[in-house]
Amino acid sequence: MQVPLLDLKTQYTSIRDEVLAAVSEVLESQRCIGGPKVAELEEKIAALSDCKFAVGTSSGTDAILNSLMSLDIGKDDEVITTPFTFFATVGSIVRTGAKPVFVDIDPNTYNINPDLIEQAVTKRTEAIMPVHLFGQMADMDPIMEVANRYNLAVIEDAAQSITSTYRGRKTGSIGTVGCLSFFPSKNLGAAGDGGMIVTNDEGLYNRLRIMGNHGANPKYYHRYVGGNFRLDPIQATVLLVKLPHLDNWSEARRRNAAFYDEKFAGTMVKTPYINPDCVSIYNQYVIRVPKRDALVAHLKEKGIGSAIYYPCPMHLQECFKRLGYKQSDFPEAEKAAREVLAIPIYPELTHEMKDCVAESIKECLV
Ligand SMILES: *Cc1c(COP(=O)(O)O)cnc(C)c1O
Image (cartoon, rainbow, N blue to C red):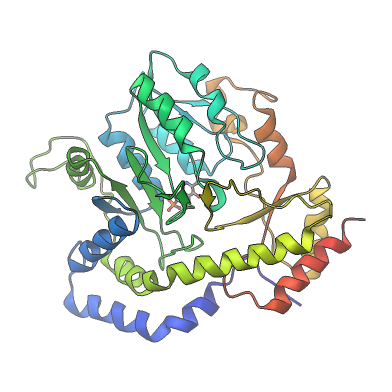
């Protein structure tokens, strides 16, 4: 039995007529930039995130970049973050001219280890950027405590965690800003690129809006050097069709996760650890096994999709060489990079498919 890591087609088929009608409506209106669909989505995502404000962006990456730029972070500034993340987190920091300062991860959750943050704070530190990896939020209370003590901004990279919670609080609502992504493989995925920034800070919200329109206010009078970070109305309309399904889809992922958890109990497979303070949306179900690369080969042979998120931690990336980090600087991130494997978790998996994935993995453990 073939089981892909992700199957977008099945989900699309279930909402095709609505998506086509919604896209057609936008095309007929020829409202090609901004407009009511973008505004409606912003309002709904703000509400869903327990935030007062939201600004649509062209991608999750641009949500992060705009947040950094609007917080005036740049040359001579430092931003503390995790080395175990998708490139966009760190790439955006470097693009502003600021310096990423890494601290190691908690090996159970793969999120930034809050106990290591304070010792990384310097006079130049301006912000902390925790990443809520795989759908589970980082341990935010101790992070906010350090941030408040040193007066630092907190930019939540919530690209993988829309609607997930920490102690009952929504992702993106605890820090200064939260950055969401609608990349097609996220729990709420567009038909292309898209993202959003959520915040409760009205002054910052106004700045984010202006910054995302080339820093212009009014039009053609540029207060800042911003960029074109706007969300496309066609993507917004597709997202509005999908939004009412989001909770059911995330719930289905949690059910799939519970199935695997039970299947792997008592085996050598280390299943995801979910902090009891958190509700995860399982953007990925990431297991840990010592002979990971042999398992990858076995699954490939059986036609089962899997992926390594992420094989090379950020402090060892070629393009960040000048930051001066080296092998064994962040042993937990490096160990995770050697052992993690994401397996199919998408909501439309059938019982037979999940069973096939679990049994195929168990075959390979002896
Ligand atoms: C997906 C993702 C992003 C950025 O997303 P894009 O929308 O693809 O630009 C940023 N950070 C993390 C952790 C992500 O997973």
